[in-house]
Each structure stands twice: as C-alpha cells, then as structure tokens.
Image 1 (cartoon, rainbow, N blue to C red):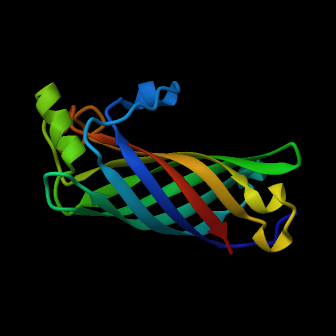
Image 2 (image 1 turned 90 degrees about the horizontal axis):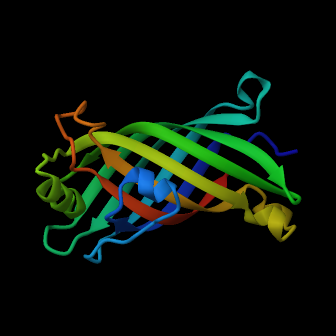
Length: 186
C-alpha cells in the first residue's frame, strides 16, 4: 500500500484541438490547423483519501500554464480547481482516472478560443470554467522501482468553456488541449 503522500506536482505539454469536448472524449482527438501548444506546471494537496471508503482521492490543485500562440502574444493561464481520482489496480499497476473542475484565467484570449468564437459567432472571455480529464498509470510500479512509486505518466484533456453561455455569456468560444504529463505524489 502507498504511504500517505499529501502533495503532488505535475508537468504537462499539449497541443490545441479543433474538436469539441464530446468528440475528443469519444476518441477523435483531432488537431488544430495552427500549431498552438501549451506547457503547464501544477501543484496539488490531498484533501481526502479513499472518500466514503471508495478508491477516490480528492485534491485541491493550482497551476500556471504558458500558451505558445502563432499570431497573438503568448498567453499565461492561472488555474485553481478540485480534482477527484478514481484509483484501480490493473495488471499489477495503479491506474487513475481523474476529473477536475474549477476556474481558469488567461492574460489574454487564447487564439484557439478566438478562432472558435469567430466560427460559431460566439464570444470570448479571459475567465472561463476549467475541466481537467485525465487517465494515467504508475510508472514506478510498472518498472518495479520503489523510489519512483506514485510517479504517474498520463494523458490529459484541458478544457476551457463558458458552459453553454453560463459563464460570461461565452457560448462557442472555448478551447481543448490534448496533453501528456508526468505527475509525482510526495
């Protein structure tokens, strides 16, 4: 069993997708016609381990992202959110499915969001809802190297949206970044 590690740190890198959230979740990741990328660093604190005696861990997380834009100035993003991880063991490895919900503020409107708003005759905003959907596995357990236990490699969908106009009247001006990451609990 794992020791009680209350903190987490994550490094991520991703590329923009022109597909919407539902299409990406169905497995059609897609890409954006422009070469838009993102790098992020985040930290987290364990709020609850094994919520209701289920294999669900709850973290408070915050982060900073850097978006490499083509036409606009490069953009910084600050995030704050709550994330739940559902843990299960598969073939002697720990696998986690994560779902995070919170807020995202960018220094200027992301190019992907601007383009999406133009296509859908929508609006944009610096502050939007943030969803963090991930799937990862413990690479320490995979290679059976105890010092690397609770080091996770995974895929991530970073999603910013106005929730169909509920936040700042943004309906058709969000963004999706398909990403990979490395996360360590300590």
